[in-house]
Image (cartoon, rainbow, N blue to C red; front, side, top):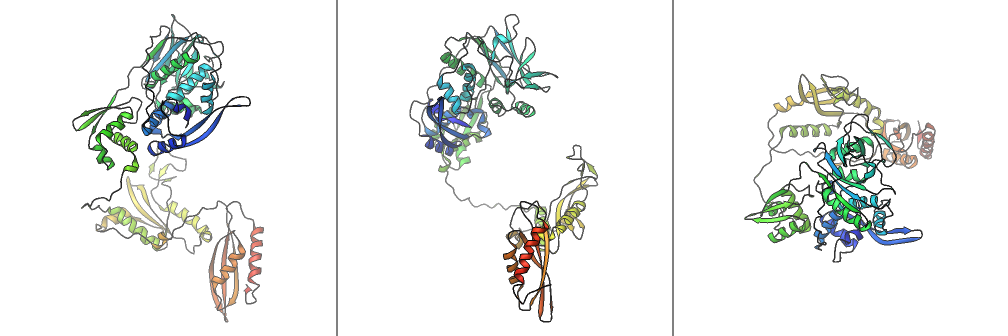
Length: 610
């Protein structure tokens, strides 16, 4: 996510480190950061202020508080030790006499707040507002919409503004409600697309006419859009169930900056903070505006979290002794209230830090701010603990080792088949609606496939085995299947008959040590054979070298498959395997390669092609 260095810097009186140094500090203590410089255009042929973009990789567990410039600024303050401006006292709003908010289901909408504002003038935003939006990739629209976007980028709380005069009024009251949709409801969103809203989707509705105004947490509706005629507005700040928002966004294929924040979960406390910031901003950029009042429905307020942190716990978890005064300092810098109670601390966690629930979480916070580089590695102490040997694992590894050393290769086939004794309630496909009762059917298919590719694999014989579960006679049985001999062995029965292991086996084999990996071509291969008489003293390796040198990159395998001697000469027969990684080869191009190979072989008068 992108953040403006200039914006973050505005929260501090004292000088911050330069962007590259700040990026390094944040990377060491909080998030991976990459700084890039940008220029902000302010008009035709002009460039605005120069800024740095901090591209910060914020992991999901911190999205609730750090998908915002304020959240990142708090982290900057903690890792640099530079104090932020003193936060303003919370604004006290009068209760609105004209707007009401209603939550229908607190499990879906924990809170819905709305600010009623009158006498506004819709116009172009000030240049500094447009600069911040443009540098972060948002298009300025007008001073009201831009203000909602700016507050979202500032606090992490999405807002949506409605033209109040386009809402229905009853007994002098406008009512915004958060409710699930009913079958057949539709909405034209701000991008002028009409949506059939699935039943059960959460919407913000105009309660007085029982009609959706916006898809909750995702996109506003066109009907209540802010335009140049707007004079009175309602600014809504709500909190929604993150799972529901994510599912709705996926179903409607509609993803927005707002939905991205809601689906990662944010604190209901942010609705108040977001509306406070909006009120301050709108008075600055729209001086004629009058705050009529606040509506707020918050059925089950978020509980304050208290965590007991034993004084020795940090040492136990991190392996280093962080001085008690340093522990308190770090926690307080992170916005927590710390009270000492004998041999432990009582820590009150900020409401916006949804990720902090246990003393282990606090130890992790202390560790990252104190610095992981300060944690010194040390050898583990001696222990008398002797790990138990798992009998099943012991014998399975032993069986694998013996089979691999005997020339077998292990395969894994599907457990889902088209017939068996155990039927699936929700099959993946029509031919995979049972659990297998035997390994052999799929093992035979694998054997036949590998046998067809024997030349490509460079194998004289194909030998494969599989170890896996089968389901028959109302039992789950571990079996061993082998091909080509087609024997199937009950491993549960076999392992139960073996003695308990007393020591771990040596599991390394020459095949495992020499294992290599390479991509497989999806295109078919072509084989050609060449046989020739050579003097008895000629070595096959020398012939192979000539073939490889002339065959080129299309030759993927070459092996000697027949040898016999007669009258002082020896006959070598080689199989050549050709394949391309990017196309299907033709007989014509392979034949040309073979002509080149045979011509070179026949240059030696002692070589005679058979």
